[in-house]
Length: 132
Image 1 (cartoon, rainbow, N blue to C red):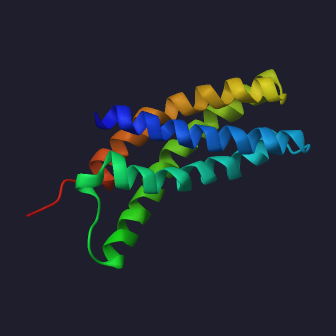
Image 2: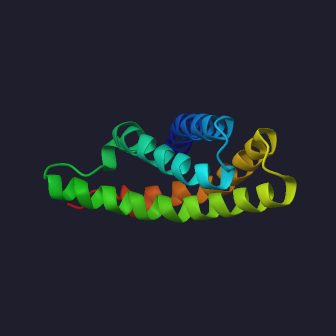
């Protein structure tokens, strides 16, 4: 069930990512540049949803410090997935072209590649089972 929820939250992140990417392309920005901002925004959008819904039983509770550590771990783990995601995206856009259509194909491919890495990192490194 966690993986299904994670994918649903990923859909929200994908929507944020794709929307910002298309908006940037529409205004004439290079997709390789816009994608850096759009993938970061998607990561920020998904953290709170994942922590309160997907991994609610395992999230940091209590102090702001514990929550900040969790947020830092989430950022590090998601950065790994985002790097893989962006590398696939950049390769496809560089080979096929920088049109909105090519950017969307590249976005789907990159996001798909980062999905499992992000889920496993979130489950085992970020939202670890509470210790007694």
